Image (cartoon, rainbow, N blue to C red; front, side, top):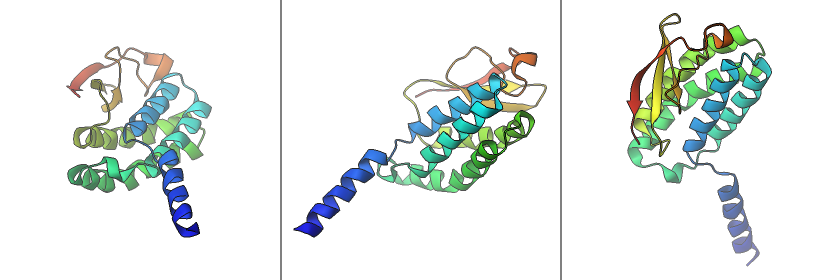
Length: 158
């Protein structure tokens, strides 16, 4: 009886801490918004939240194809999120944000991360994209220096 109660308690606690894949996108948006605001400390904190979201994805919410895509990108996402979280220097964080965004785009194309459109936005100066939940351009690569530089490249429909 104790073993059954322990198993139920563990399963319940896992469900409390397991997260939806959409939490990865929400955390990514937090990193993007912090870089847009030129805030290295906030980017570090938000990247830490992204790491947690990546580690806590509830795999039971993914079908076989999504699971395979997520597992193929997990280490890449973790690598760049960890660098952003550890180094409180905006220029360094933005360099890792380039690859983080490439891999987030691949994940967003393979796994349903949102019930809302996801906008792939492009900075011609950096020659790099990022994801946004808003079609209005707010450039995370140059922040306040060139806030509205860029364009919507594609729109991923839910």
